[in-house]
Length: 333
Image 1 (tube, rainbow, N blue to C red):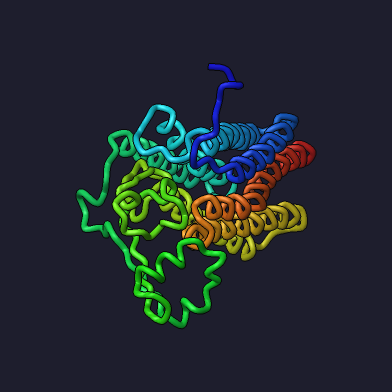
Image 2: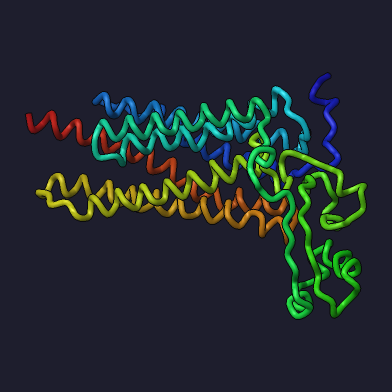
């Protein structure tokens, strides 16, 4: 089958494809810039290798994501291609954690300890995803969730802009009654947005690995983003803030102060990037509630654009700083 024979999937998400490609272009641009850098010290070579590896993995993951949004938007079972996509999705933040650890940790021992922790976390996740573990089968985790909205709040919502709202109001007894929204584990990417909360078995029995909720399957994207999107970025935020505060308290002469000032600036913008990413992932379910799965993914991508730019800029600046420090060290000797 040639490219001309490809047909968009029924639930294709073209806007998600476009925003994924934009993220891909950002990493391509930084990869080209990183390739031109000429480190001097072993530490500089390590930083450049890690920064370039992170960009390469992100490019592959985002390119595959753009393809999936058009031609395989709602996978419901584990396939080889989906497993690769999942593994790359976990590898991106793990590799990023390895890269920034080489710059923000205060000692070689701390650097290696953090890098090993990120590597172990990725290996463990991939192993659990490969066996398709569902944590709800082994722990008392909720398989359904409910939210009751008062009639007053319902009256504030723009019904003409939320397709599921008229159906939910009618199912709850009409205007003036509380509306109960029930998430039952269905795949919301596979359900038309207006029927997101329909009790009809035609919709309630649909499932996908992209937007099921609640879903405790390790190989689902909600779980991937819970651990590697929200969890790791909270850790990154705390680590960069701690590194920034540590540098601010150190006493230095003029030349080390200039280098430390540059590092503090880098750590600050990394802190901003991690805060943006955490916000984007944390509010993605809210965006999905009001704009659908496609709108929620677009929200996350749009927040990630400045965040990933700042991440890549920081990694590039770390390499440049190592080059300048090596040159200054040679002059001093």
